[in-house]
Amino acid sequence: MTETKDRCAGTLFSQIRGIFAGLGILGRDLVISHDGVSYRVSCDEKSFVVYRVNSDSGTKHHVPGWPVCMVSSDVIFEECSSPYIGRDHCACGLDLEKWLEIIRNHNARGLPSP
Image (cartoon, rainbow, N blue to C red; front, side, top):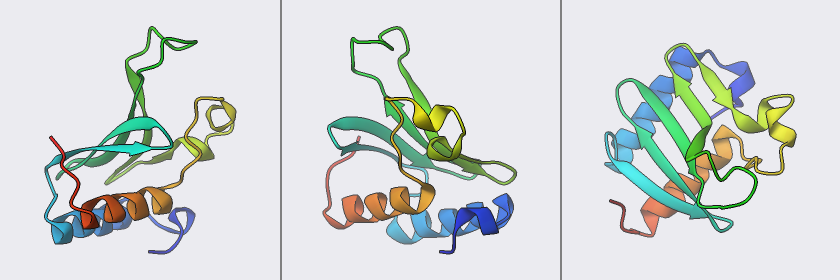
């Protein structure tokens, strides 16, 4: 997959749906742990979303979580590409391509997901 900044949202989302369908996980919710943080990942006919689950009782204890990556037919959002959000100490720092690699590895290992 080429870099997201060179892609239109609709084309990119179609490719992501194809990846999820090919892995047999389209429409399923995954829970993935990366660097000690839990993320909920899903892709369906409407959107692809990576959502950080906030289990920390520190600075953002009042927030249950937040999206770190989202692609739909008309939106591409990557937390790490946002000028101010990406510098937050809670930002994941991962772009879409890295998330897709993590998801492929997670699926290849056959790890259980809810």
